[in-house]
Image 1 (tube, rainbow, N blue to C red):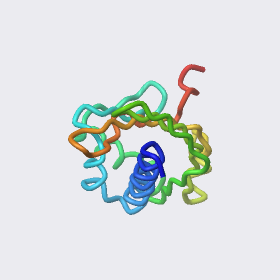
Image 2 (spheres, one colour):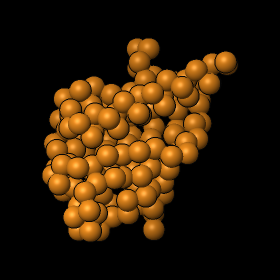
Image 3 (tube, rainbow, N blue to C red):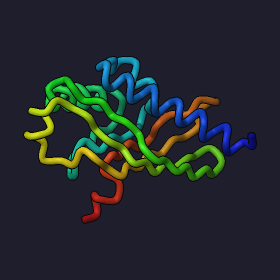
Image 4 (spheres, rainbow, N blue to C red):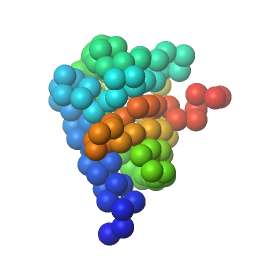
Length: 136
C-alpha cells in the first residue's frame, strides 16, 4: 500500500466515524474532527464557521430531521496533495419518513470535503454536503 492509499484509508475511516457520531448525536466528539477555523455548509447560503458554531449547526440539523439522520457514504474519490485531501463523495441521508417528506433538500448528494493534516492528525476544514450544487 502506497502513502496515498494509506491516507485514503485513514480519511475514509474518519468520515465513517463522523457519520456514526452524527447519527448518534455525539457532537462534542464530532467537532474534534474539525479544524478550529473549519466551515460547514449548513444549507445553500448558510455557513457555520468554527467548532462551536458547527456543533450548534449539527444540533439544529438533527432537530430538522426529527433526530433520525443517518449519513451513508457511497462512492468516494480522494485527491491527495501533500497535507491536503479533497474528497468527492456520493452521500446519502437516511431519516424518518416524516423528516424526508418535509425536507426541501435532496437526500442524495455529491459532497465535497477538504481535510488538512494538522500536527499529524487529519482534520476536516471544509464540510460541504451540497458539493458543486452550490453554484447552481
